[in-house]
Length: 304
Image (cartoon, rainbow, N blue to C red; front, side, top):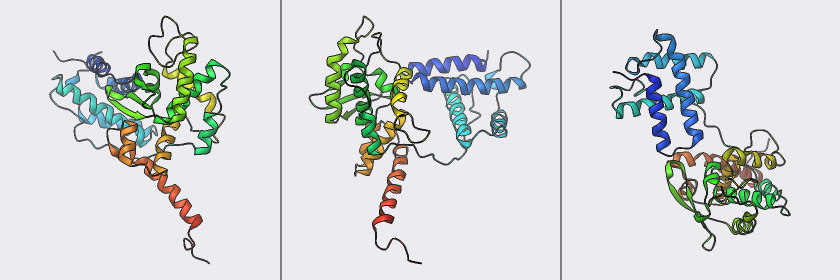
């Protein structure tokens, strides 16, 4: 008997969890497929939507309905990517014979340049925590670690003490899909982490295990708790809307490239699978170079 879309969705999400994808990513995939399922319910009289009866035309109608509701091409592209990946899994698991999304083009959209802090703004941001309190010492270490090696919030939340090698000034980061990478630590970050590790005993509880960053109750800080902590500092530095804790990761990459770092090296440190993902930061540094050129070169502009 053919599986329903709902049954296949649940099986797919279990597979994603087994692959150690982040909870945020799995939630996004789940919501996209559930939205697709809700749209398809109009085509089926029975309660369950048979997986094998879903056609390419239905997928197109789903995307058209989103477009008519003024969803951006970026949103449409994400939906196509989600549904394509879902059906690719279904085909490989022999849940369905054909992928109705195979070969369907992904809607094009302009690549949005990530927001990043200037070096002066980063300096101010890192100096905000009050080092006379254990929370300030912890928060300074979080900020320094984020900026020193461009970690994702989820990577910070899952970090263990054993991943640090402060003597060699290195950290072993476990990223998406359980992929590991070794990233250098700056001396400022190492100093902040040493201070925090001394203060960490004041946070510890039976639930601490060897997680690096702990909450006031001694439990590991969750990604949402980390974002809440960081947002309180960011709002004091950001001059416009749109900045987030992820902007610190963008700043890490942009500042490295601005100072001449190799693009491939930055890719490795960020944990990007594809170089094209990292190349977005070259647009930022090119803009900076162009600005400097226009200001400094004697023949950059023609006199009227």
